[in-house]
Length: 207
Image 1 (cartoon, rainbow, N blue to C red):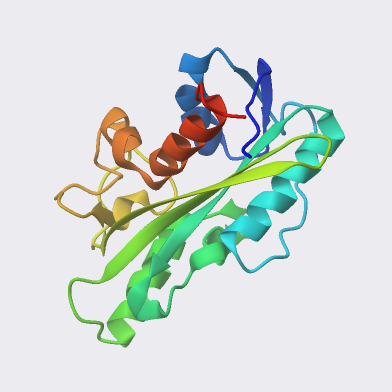
Image 2 (spheres, rainbow, N blue to C red):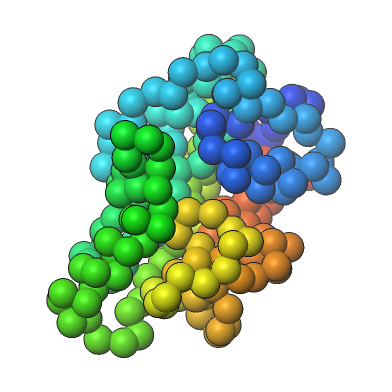
């Protein structure tokens, strides 16, 4: 059975300021105070799995064991159908440079590859988010969320982060980068995964 979360403090197993802000806002209504792995001075473990769930587990269990507190990790990325699901779990890696992450460069790479393949429109894609809530005793719960849409060019908007400026969710004309953050939070892949997390772990019927 799903294990209920009955504490009041949670480690967010991330060093990504954008993710920490989003997750903190989503947890605020439940009276849960959050601290990030970065705040605790924890290292970032090497992500060696080839699935979102596998990497989410690595991060959550590492933070839970190191902190002695339940830890929530988020492994997410964009999968582009015409690129055989790339960049997928390597979404952040595509942005890595010697001077930090350069997402405009990574988004340009995606579009360049699509152009080289002469991929037909719409150039469908999906944002995927897998959450792992892990306890220090080794127990964990996994929740997956997804939002479908298409890759758009040129980049538009500065409201989001990562690949948001080139992703237009189904049924909308704005990119996630142009969308009001509150509107994005209501429909994002992270919101989808969080709704499942909340229902199972913070809900009254959890066991």
